[in-house]
Length: 76
Ligand SMILES: [Zn+2]
Image (cartoon, rainbow, N blue to C red; front, top):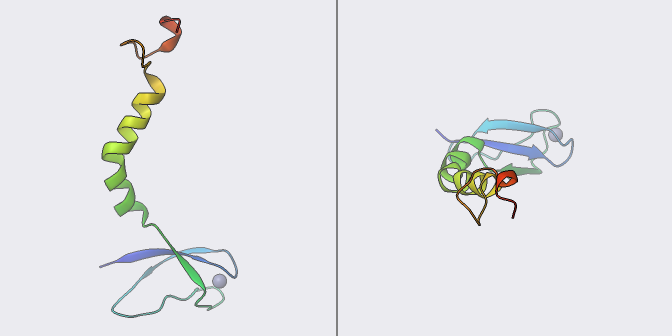
């Protein structure tokens, strides 16, 4: 079942809500339907972390000019 995360535009609160069919999400605090859907953290992260986290962490910690994982030792 899809649980989505929303951010209320009115009171700026984040909440997660289970959406069934054409249910309209509304803020549990103020009841407005002016809410913005956020990227579901679990679905999104698990998709992105495979390629992106690996490459970005590799880029941050390894030097492009040498095989060392620590640039302080290569002097570039
Ligand atoms: Zn609200």
